[in-house]
Image 1 (tube, helix red, strand yellow):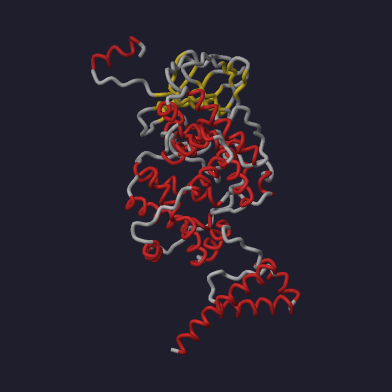
Image 2 (cartoon, rainbow over the protein chains, first blue to last red):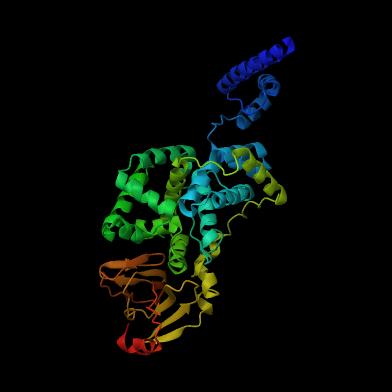
Length: 250
Length: 224
């Protein structure tokens, strides 16, 4: 009886230690995996702490690999999966995105089993293509969206989906570093998200219809009983605002 | 090279959402290969798609989250290989010599030098491009310098992408990479600029197909 109480007590204590440790680690810019149990976290903390404070050369090194890592930075998780097949990072991507990707599939296929299957295929593709993800060039949300979109289309359409090829000699690359290279893509995503939320309902609804149910702009006009010109100008207005929010020419 | 005439937001959105059928898609994808500005606009649309997906209410798994995760692990173990990082981009120095970018070049089966042009009359040539998509007609056009584009009657949408040379349509000049979007409401008469033949990709709605052989037989006479 007593031992049970002690083990419970210990558990609570360990959680308290774990939480305290996380706060300290964050203040010191240390990278401690949030799922690590308290004892291991403590050991890792000690090791990192010792190295940082006793070896100036290693200190610089540690600073680099222990950059603050916000929990929702999916981009960095994808990079970790691509570099070393990091299962822990992959699980975090799964936890964050699987329910959303499933919901995205449901919008079109309306069948929980098929949506689950397409979500699984999307995750396998994320795993396989992770090394191709470039966090400087693309936002992780956009990258995952394009993978999910392509798989959803492939699931019911047979025809080819021709695309451009960045390695083609005739492909015209960006002239210099793109202006957005200097802005963190995560910051971009947040600003875009804020602008998207701020769109008038008629524009926001139109985008949802287009992205979720995969309806062309002319079908949207027919479905909503609007003149084609009205739909076109709503699309134009919506994207001018989104571009302006990211500092691009509207 | 600055692209003056980029794809419209409405059509680019159709590309980003994946609804565009093969024929139209060839024109937009080839335009995107030539226009970094349009690609940046596409990237923003895809980011918007990602943000909308993130806002969706989470859909629970028909299994349950843990079993769904375990199922995924099993799949990964069966196909443990990861794709390699993409090879570094090819040297852009030979870019000038290739006229047809991908994905168009694969559809044509080579660059312009290998095209077996068919005469259209009045010095113009064309090459029909085979696509699975039966609702569009895709072809390359070669218009002699200074001559108008032959009547290519469109009752629906028409996309024209310039690949070499240039043409004027009223006040507007269209050069390599520029895309002209036209519909039945637009009266236009493109004329190839003096000095160089103009090669462009034209995509139109396919002519209506009639079941009856009789209607099919008189279709060219009636011009429908």
